[in-house]
Length: 230
Image (cartoon, rainbow, N blue to C red):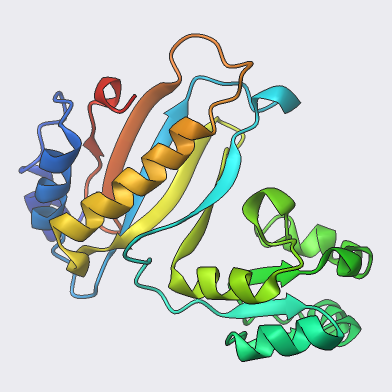
């Protein structure tokens, strides 16, 4: 597939043989964002763990200081007081079995985050096959299975993101928009990297961070000096 003119122009700014310090990489990334829309900035971290082993899983969530730049739609499975608390906190959709049926029968996915109280997980279990592959299944480690649904909604709206390994031991996460500028992107970058480092499994041996690349939606990848990340 041939690359576009703007991509090729941006690629000329990046030395593919160099490992950039994170601040320098983010400054350079802002220069490579040439699309007509506000590009998402993504961070890709390859870890020295084996996700096939349960004791080497890396998964969690972190609230980015400056959010993601995206309006997050929340679906909350709760009843009674917890349902009312979710609504008061600004949840977009609140219900129980009715939303399970809407998803299964209508293939409805007008939401970005699913939050649930623990007692609702038996009901949501029926959705595992459709929510799981999309990364939307509520999980205690991500803080999306909780009794404090109001706080979970507020954090999701504020820019909480979930990070988890894919099958190739890489974490892919958005850390904001190109329009944020270098300073805000750096704050978000540092928050995510710190969370991933803290989540290092005890069973992980050798070098933990194997590579780290940052890129905009349409721009070239910029390699970051992972040895300085911890």
